[in-house]
Image (tube, rainbow, N blue to C red):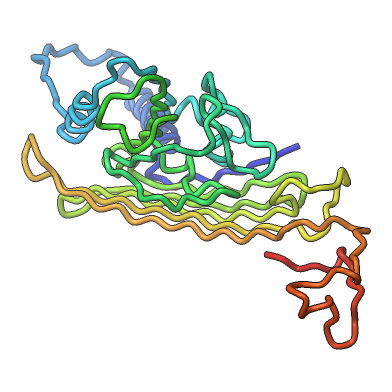
Amino acid sequence: MQRGIRLLAPGVAKASLALVFGITIGGRANAQASGDQTPPAATSQPEQEITVTAQRLNEARQNIEPAIGASTYNFSNQAIENMPGGENAGLNQVLLQAPGVAQDNLANGAFHIRNEHLNVQYRINGVIIPDGVSFFGQGLSPRFIQSMNLITGTMPAQYGLRTSGVVDVTTKSGIFQNGGSAEMYGGSYWTTQPSAEYGGNVAGWNYFASGEFFHSTHGINSPVSNYDAVHDNTNQEHGLAYAEKIIDPSSKVSFIFGSFLGRFEIPNNPGQQDNPNVTLFNTFDGTINGQSSFDSNALRAT
């Protein structure tokens, strides 16, 4: 059973709704106190069209990418929040909702697209992320995702570096995510996951930053069926910051800073017997400091 608590700063959307509601009630109270029961006359104002340049630039970038012959599955931020665990879930748990995606049976966080082993390309705001995403845990967190597309099938030529799938992420922006929140999430296996995010705009710059820490006693699938695996703790840290400045209606400059630090203990298989008669290259007989028998339960591989 998982439980989560979220604290919202005044600038976040949910708090803004509460503020508007309070102002409305206050206005009614003032009208009644003054004895004026006549509603104000409605004034007709010409409609004005407001174009948000930042949103238009994001849509223009997405339209450049061809989808001929490929299948695209979209995940909005609202769809991610509606999942069990919401933004606290791993990126692999979000992608498992799409057809053709299967969970790897060895390492948590790994998945397969169309029965391929890895071979997935990651993009953030159109920028290809270099190889190096951890196999045991996900280097990317859903917390900073505004929308995400999973592109599979017959890939256009521009996706030639990877053939099984492309994960294209559009990050949140301070102009649409003004304010912040702090959250604590936890559950079984001593799972603890504090997180925070904040966004805004200053001096023409839109910025957004998020970070989280994850701890669990079930980091990697254990070779034994015991509930409490031996030596299976994990500590993971995710961080991402995004800043952009719009130069004109057709161009902008942006910076992305991200980090992932994952520490995984390799679970032990207790009761394994060593063979002292086996030698290595006829020079090492398995004896260290006069000891030739070792308890597999005491291994500390990380």
